[in-house]
Image (tube, rainbow, N blue to C red):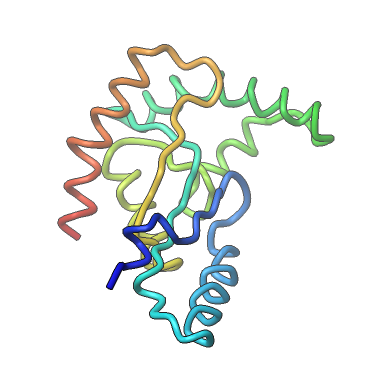
Length: 156
């Protein structure tokens, strides 16, 4: 029997604003609908796509990410009808209840693990190059994601 996951089937949520806990209604509905129609929800993975960045320290992550992110989100806001990104909004978004997955490896892993617990996700996708972050910084973030964050998540 072919598993649904091997076909690339599943749910992917783009959480780019607000409190991620509010997405629980979607994951619950997804699972209950699959079960109602005779499918095993465990065969249909759930993933989250989020904006963020990993650096050796939280301060370095903020310094590298905020200017580019604020610029990009302000520009998008003009196109889509919302106001400019403020530092206060950014700080709320990077808080434990926020949508940004940003900081040192331990902070990033803790947020992903929390989303795994709350939403039941099996996969996570980090969109790191929002705006104009220097290429070498993005490469370092990818390296930290693979060498420091992933082992923390797998070991949990």
